[in-house]
Amino acid sequence: MSQTDHLDSVMERASVALVRMDYLACERYCLEALAMARRERRWAYYARILLPLQEARRHRRMIAADGVVRLGSTDLADIGSGILEQVTPGCMVVTRPHGKRDALALASAARDLGRYLEVLYCDNEASDEVWHVTSWQGPAVTVARPAPPASWRDVWLGGDIKLPLSPVKSAQRPADWVIDATEALGDAALAQVAQSEQLAHRGQDTDPMQRLAALEACLLVVTDHEIIHQRLGDAARMLAVAQAGSQS
Image (cartoon, rainbow, N blue to C red):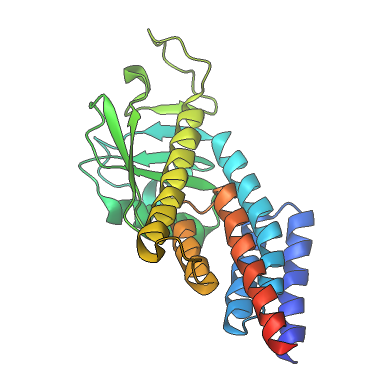
């Protein structure tokens, strides 16, 4: 089987998984195909792969947001695979005394076991009134957010669990706090890339390959941030145009 045939075969499996609403399988196949397209410098194909990848990740996030939510991990002795039965599908915000490695281990366990779980890391105590949403993979990015209501912290919320009353009126669900914080972290990652490009190039156009690599790193910070997918697609299409020009 040629490389082209193999790439097409992987994307066919991704398409079938997407139709069957097996979003985790679709994501896995898309990432395999994306790595292959990058190695082969097939930038137009790379950009096309991002579309079903973005769609699968959007649905992954939506499924997680409808599940159980935990905002803070203060009194959890183990936030590894042992709690996945309780929290998936769902959203988990890891806080001190746990760290980035714990968030990474939890996300990795969820991925390996095929569970729908959004993992966010906040480098603060759950009792703090400002939470510092911090990347646990990819570039170092932090954004400050108002803490969720005190009655939402360090307890299991959502699913069949009745929400505790909060003195703060809010139209949000606990999962909305997670999604909003995730979006803010992704926005901050994109802003960091733009600032780095301005400082490095002083008005000159950024090399498309450098932009693509920077945006790939951004996507590690927030894997389901839709605008990052779109910007990455733009960078890949720029590379495809440059590649076609050099071959003409």
